[in-house]
Amino acid sequence: MLAAGLAAEAAEHLDDALPLLRRHRVGQDLAEAELARAAAALLLGDHPGAREFAAQAQRRFARRGSKPWAEVAALTKLRAEAGYSASVTPRRFERLAGRLHDVGLPDEAAVATMLAARLALRRGSPAPAAGIPTPRPTAPIDHVMLHHLCLAERAVAAGDPGTALVQAQSGLDRLGRVRDRMGGLDLLCGTAVHGRELGELAVSLVLSTTPPSPTETFDWLERTRAQVYRYEPLPAIGDPVLARRVAEARSVSRSLQQARLDRRPVAELEQRLEALRQEVSRLGWHTSPWGRPRPVARSGDVTPPLGDKAMISYACNDGTVHAVVLADGKATLHTLGPAEHVVELTRQLHADLDVLAPDHLPDVLAKSVTASASARAKALDNALVKPLLPVLDGRDLVVIPTGDLYAVPWSALPSLHGRPVVVAPSATAWTTASSTATSADRVVLVGGPELPEGSAEVAALHRAYPDAVVLEGKYATAGAVLEALNGTRLAHIAAHGTHAPDNALFSKLELFDGPLFAHETAQLTRPPEQVVLASCELALSHIRPGDEALGFAGAMLASGSRTVISAVSKVGDKAAADTMTLFYQGLATGRTTAQALAEATAPDPLRRPFVCFGSDH
Image (cartoon, rainbow, N blue to C red; front, top):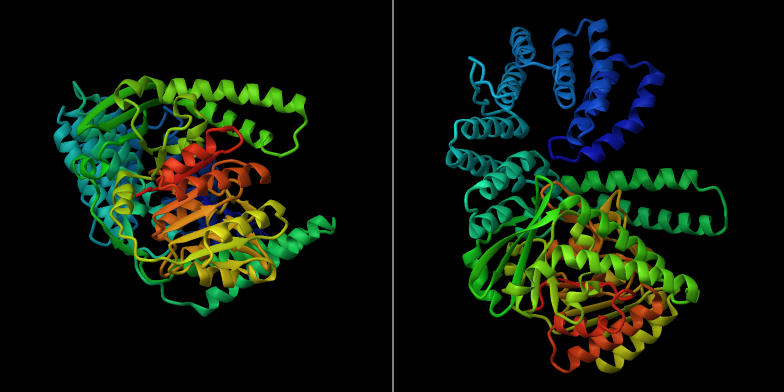
């Protein structure tokens, strides 16, 4: 898990295991688990926590006489200390490298030497005499990436940014070859953490040139973001054990929901569901490789399919938001302002929209929250869009967000009211989706439980699509819906949904027999070309390093769906139904998906936070 960059998941597993190991006094295993927990904390940026776990492990190894293990723990402890203490010197890493070499650990000795070099370079000193060692062919990928990072930073210190960018590209290529062998969406996303520093360094170098090149900035952003979406999914190898565990998780989830409604104890059910989620994730990691990699799009590849639209590619670097705009065959680069301000506005607006969502909100509360949300939407508009209006020139937009900007309800920003906007994880993903040929003609309409407006919505759509497959009531089971989704042109799903921020592939749609998980949709062999999720917040994603966004909508896009319509915050049943009525009326008159959605959200953009993801071609 740590090798694949799944630090949070590893930490969760280890936090469950450590109390049991302490209780049973399993010394060696306990010390190794503490050391692994320290490594997870390092990846998560928790340097004090990493030091504490590593120190505990070092003491246990020393008491057991396990000198090699104790030195490895010492390396992790020193690495953690260097993250927050100026007292750590390159010489301390050099001495530790010697001890690691003496106990027969050449790979770890090389890491200590490279960390000494990095620390010296950051403090304005030349790299130590030992130089920067080349990792052995069997070295882990994080050691390889550290090697390229050291060489890149040495080139920067020598005033040679060109060589630094070559090292960045070489390192990211090596990481890509590791990613190509991964099975499962979460593993594919997780590996990006190992290239985070190298990618950030490359983008910083490009932005610091005088003047910075908009096209080179755009191309480097594409190399370093949302790589999971450039894979063409391969047919999954069926795993009956995995299928049984997913079905069991669905049953337990339904029982848990009922127990909460009945106010019965839920601790045992919660523990069982979490255990099942962990097992489903683990089984998914051992399937065949997720997909076949496609080339990363460059700015020149994007211009022809973009046509008369404009593309905005946002980036956060060194605490500042930047935007590259492609329009009319030209690229322009814009510095927009502090990232912290934009992130805080996005979170505040999202909170306001969640409060505003219920259909029957008291008037006084509705007016107060509407005023707050409007002010924040205007401020976010001023920060992200208004400075770009002269080059956007009224065009339809393709937006490539970064980090928290994935949660922006773009149609709620005043400058974008009624303007067609498509949001894509990367230009590479948008280009691929835009070039995918339509091959299916079947329509599927799904109505979930406890959604009165949804039933009327499905009935109205059935009149517009009389040949559609309709699944409602007891027929809207997870298995039936999954089977129906395969090979469809359009899938409309009116059902309650929930985003799971702690395990995004368990974001879910509530159906008759329990939830349909994002994990299951990722296994479809022929995912629907267009998906409309007329429900709450299923556009939300867990953002991993490298802008690897994963959630229900993201899983559909990564699996091959061309377009997903979904909401980025909570939405009332009536507001959702009203949006869908206008949306399908627009489609019937020949509007594109983004055009129809823009017209459908314009009457009440704060209560209709739906976004068009992927492509509208």
